[in-house]
Length: 425
Image (tube, rainbow, N blue to C red):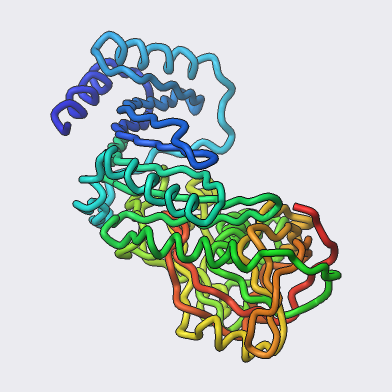
C-alpha cells in the first residue's frame, strides 16, 4: 500500500506547477448490511479509492478528486485542478499548507474488528431478528464496518498517514405505535455484546407500553448517553473561537472564566481504548486539550485561517471526551425524587447562537420516575434549553461510555430541564 501511495505522490510532485498544494489519498474497505421488518434487505461491500488534489496559484485555490490512480488519471487531476485555480477568485483568507510536524501515533487497528467477516455480520443480524420474532416485534437497522488507510502530503513538507477500523450497529424495535432504538459503535469488536444491546433494546421497548399523557413542565431529567452525545455535540461547533470573537456566541472573552457548571469537564484526548483517534486533519495535529475543566473555559478550537489572523496556533476538536462519575441510574432517580428518563433527542436546532439557546424533541421513549422507581412511559416533548445552563444544573454523572466513534460521554442527571410542548413523534 505504501509503495502504491508513494508512486501516486511522485507523479503529483513531478507534474505540479502550483505554488502550494495538499494531497489526500485514502483507501477504504466498507461493509454495510441493512435489515428491515425482520428481513435482510441489503448488503453492500466494496473498496473505495480517493485521491484529492488541492492547488494554490497566486493565492487562488481549487480542488478536484478522482477514484482511480493510474498515471494518466493523476496527471489529468493535477492539470485540471491547476487550470481551475488560475481562473478562480483570489482567496482573501488564504494560508499556506501545513508544514512538517510531528503527530502522535495512534492505535486504531484491533484484530477483532479487522477480522470481522460478512458471515459474522449476517449471523449477528440473524440472531437479533430471531430475538425480535420471539418477542412478537419487528426489527430494522444497519451494521457498518469500515477500514481505512489515509495519507496526507503538502508541498510545505507535511507527510503523514494513519489507519482506522471501526464498526457501528443500530437496531430499531417496533410494534404498532411503540418504537425505540439503540446503537453502539467502537473500534474494538471484542468489546461488543449483542446480548447487552438486545437487553437494553427490549428493556426500553417494554417500558413504553401505553404511554401516559403528561403536560410539559420544568422537571429533573436523566439523560442517557445517546441523548447527552446528541445535544452536547453542538459544543463542537459553538465553542469555535472565531465565532466567539465575532460575537456570534456568548463566549467572547470567557477563556479562563467559569462559564459552565463545576461538574462539567470536556476534553480532546490523544489515547482512548474505545474511540477512533485521528492524529491530524487539514491544518492541525491532534493534541490533548482540556476545553472545559471544572466548568472553566480553558481553550477554544481555532481554524488555521483564524489562527493566522490572530497569531495563535490552530487547534481542532478531534474527539469529545466528557468526564463521568460512578452514580448509577437508580441512585439518580433517588436523588431527583421525580423526573423523566430521556433515551434520545433529535431535530435539535439553534434558536439563538448568541445565547446557546437550543430547541429539540425527545425520541425513542420517555419514562416517568418517582420515589426511585420508574412508574410508566409518557409522551414525547419539545424542549428549549441553553447548553451552558444545562451543565450548571448537573446533579450527578454516570460512567462515561462510547456513543459515536469520536464521542465518549456519561449519563447525566440534570435539574429543572425545560420542556415547553408535547409532540406526537
